[in-house]
View 1 (cartoon, rainbow, N blue to C red):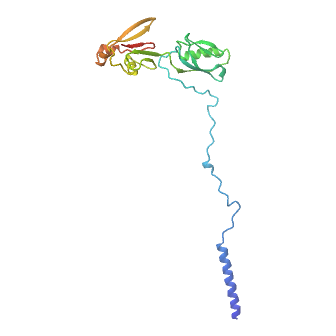
View 2: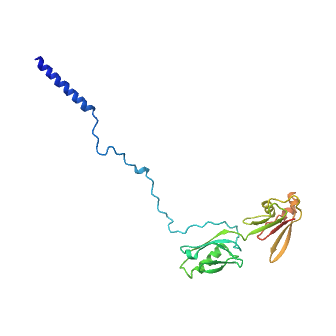
View 3: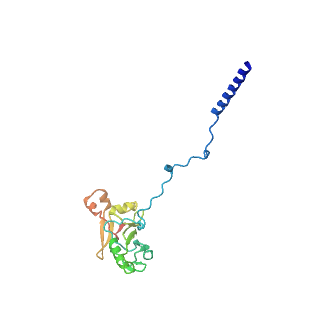
Amino acid sequence: MRSTLAILAALALSATSVFAQTATSPAPKSAGADKPPAASNANAAPKPAASSAAGAPAAVVGVQPPPGYVIGIQDVLDVVVWKEEDMSAEKVVVRPDGRISLPLVNDIDAVGLTVEQLRLKIQEAATKFVQEPEVSVVVKEINSRRVSITGQVAKPGQYPLLSRMTVMDLISMAGGTAEYADKKEIRITRVKNGKSESLLFNLKDFQKGKPKALEQNIELIPGDIVTVP
């Protein structure tokens, strides 16, 4: 009897041990468990959208002409005929005869015209070679609008006139007058209607705020020459 009970107890202990080992063993790995998870599409770089301006002519950057600007000698222009590279030209200089040279359309008068007037003129000439041409004209350099200052100033020379400038503005841009300059006899030489005239500017009285000298501080126009004796 005791032998039978011992056998039953041994069997029960063995079954308990097997059950415990089964419960604590790791679950079998599924196929592909060692592989890292796939990257999320939320972090993927977005694809660039198609440009809405595809086929449009690229913008050409130039200088901003002052109000009332007309094209003058030595000004530099870019002329672009859209989709017609053979008819376009960069850095076209206005010649002393007032004309510019372009491929195919050859010489065109430019001096004295506004940018829009020249654009229309080129567009009309281009119709001989292209149906409904699209032309743009951009001012790259304005060299025709200059004033000069000579004599007893720190930096004599030519200065571009791209906005409103008075005699006093030009003297300041030139670094001011020298120590021994005659501030009472500054002269502005101006060519008007084919005739040369000389205008006085009394800087000494201007600095004192005298009304007459304030009126002498005139606005300069292209071609004016200021002389500081």
